[in-house]
Image (tube, rainbow, N blue to C red; front, side, top):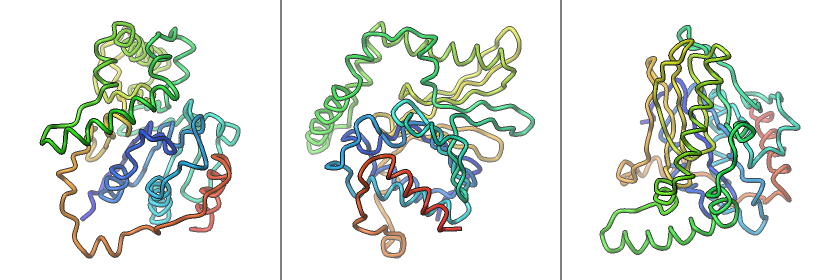
Length: 286
């Protein structure tokens, strides 16, 4: 039985990288039925896109999103810094799929400002930890982390995230995250928004801050590389969802047969071609 939601928000999936937890995300997407699904940036990692590495689970995530759009879910793909190439197609719509750089919503009389958050890098000086953990180095750290976690699980121990531990202990990283959140809240307040929702920093968060002008609620959907989190909105309330593999230990045989995606799919030449195929499939499903 799928959980019905008004809105689900995910960000920083980084499809096409070794760090992406596509299998877990696929399980999550199959378990929900949202009226609106917001992919808040870095869904496809164009920076590190390689034809030789795009596993079937990554394609199945895309196929699942397309299937959800075909079943009536309104999908907003908001561009981030790792898929900023797609910004040349911004404000394009095909069926229930909409490509945007930002999204403005009104819910229950409140104004929402939703975007990835990399624009704040203009206001906040890059900290050294971003260079150390960014790009290929970050992806390599995640790969090593996965191998160690396989060993930990085999010994009956819980998983751990090295990147999280590093970011929580490095003074510059803590300051960068704090500055990012404070900047988002201040700009939202200055522009009259009640809520600001971001991704980008891979840290799920939900807090209300009293500003000079008005209270502002800051939300961050986290990521599907380290945290495996999402934002969910239902019955007028926001919650942070955190993936737990125990929730998916049992899947009925009926669901396994009826809800399976194709085993293989044609591999596009590059990430932009992949997006064009997403658009074409979105159009053909309507």
